[in-house]
Image 1 (cartoon, one colour):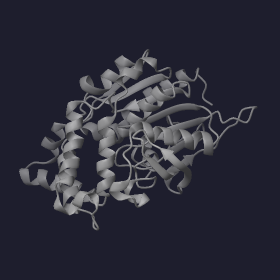
Image 2 (cartoon, helix red, strand yellow; image 1 turned 90 degrees about the vertical axis):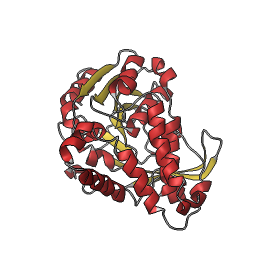
Image 3 (tube, one colour; image 1 turned 180 degrees about the horizontal axis):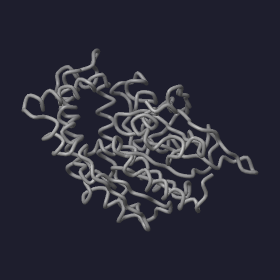
Image 4 (cartoon, helix red, strand yellow; image 1 turned 180 degrees about the vertical axis):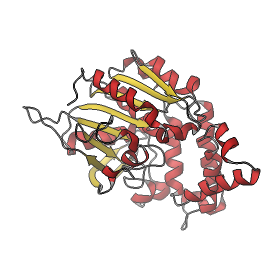
Length: 337
């Protein structure tokens, strides 16, 4: 674990009667979050050094400074000595309101990536007193949220760094997340979402299938020398994620499937650096992150090779650190704080 994350304790923001894009209403919407660094205020008292980090599909508010820890710390792009960094747990993740944490189970209303972002907007503006961000960044599902942010609130930030993401859910991505959900729902133990015990076997099988897309094909060739080794690796991945809540997974997958900001990219005003992994089988270049860079006026694109595939967007992010630092400095007019 990155040392800066060792003693972080989550805090919570609550909103009554939060209306979702589906028309559903959460009587109480909870957002879990952590912060790193200290807010710097201008002469009018406004916070002028806030940066938002959005986490990925399986993460929470702690994922930024841990899994993506190479981007966090002194002298790195997300430096707590320079920025007031806010890391929320997305709507639908267990620390924030979700089918599991709310106790609503399958009666929890459906939500979208846009709902996640609007909940974060309320956290920033109503609770933390942030009227504008320096920047927003995130990887994978966090990249989706980053794109949603710069489309829905185009005047709210100076810069953005979406990592390992696409502008919409393509047929392949819909199939990956959809098959994962159908695997869970087809298990009799799921009981239409009204289970009394987690359908762990269904979760294990669902994650095993999805995990095939997480690494580059060459990774499996080099890491696993036999069919038995491949299956054991997938089994280990499945067991490691079998502690998730099944409804949380299905609801989150639906949000991933419905994501689409492709027709909004031309209106983006934030200076944008799109970061991708050339070997990403989940969000490959031509189908995904290159489309983001082509869609946003003036966007820059940086892609690197990683045998880790999609997982390389976090584990090999050091390959993009210098480019990210330079981009941020230029986006902020050369100022370093």
